Length: 387
Figure 1 (cartoon, rainbow, N blue to C red):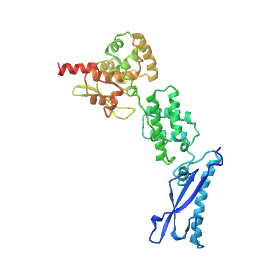
Figure 2 (cartoon, rainbow, N blue to C red):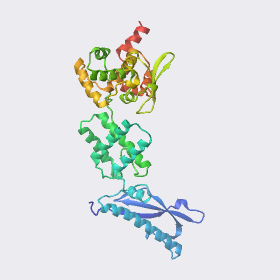
Figure 3 (cartoon, rainbow, N blue to C red):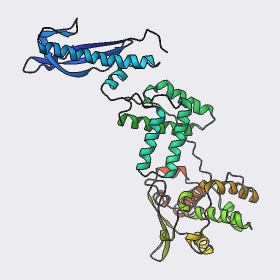
Figure 4 (tube, rainbow, N blue to C red):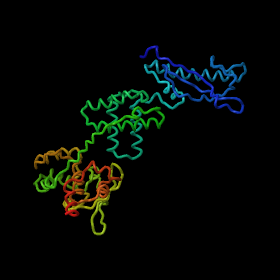
């Protein structure tokens, strides 16, 4: 509960610069809370400039028009003070601008952060965002609500909460760039709140994030891929390995691999291709079918029969696979996409534009998250052009 030092002051002033042809000018409202003022706003009332008594804050005269104007001014003052005092009695002191926004119905006092997050996620669902994207946003907001509490009003979140939230994330041993991604998701959340009229400011606005470029492009070498191909696996692990290798030779994300269907396979000029629309982004991807990927399809009797294993289970099995053949890397489904990118760039010497099209990206900017040109590509081009 706040103390009695919290005070609000409501004053009215003429806007003399806007006198009309009838000699009347508008009346503006000015609000101060603890000495800090809000932006003044129009009351919708206009009076003759010579009849305004600034000291008494009243229109002079005994006419019905003057009395009516004074009644309206008193009603405005009462409503504004009531907004402030009601919230103060509940242990919350609104800023002058928040009081003004509530009065002008730009701010909702009944919108906690939890409800704002729920509304934003609902909007993402209506925009047909992928289930994985929805889960990512939900995870970010779970962190925020764990830090702030479910009942904190969205309009109460300020800069101190924002900086404290980032430090709190770091204390949980999360990587720097992951903390930044969570923070960026929260920026979008409060921008949505402003657009919907639930809050007036974005506390995340102007926050400076320092990125450490912790991009992991670890992939399998051709020798390590060969180990997976040549080892005699059990029936269960063979399906895991075949799924992984298929993604290594097509660059498919596991979500796209699991949704693959026979109609995604087609022929252009005698060559077999895969053409899909990515689950996550709805962006198209066109991939020439590598001979080894075709062998896997033929092995199972068609795309519809390819082994489909959940991401979590296959990642667990891949740890056993790596240990069995002596691969000292954290083998996951994501590494298959990075291995494909490495092969495309450094073995097949493909352009970044072509690799982006195969991965289902609209620009080459994201290629850096999956692979980079290394000495193999450099030497191949050097041998071709310089030697």
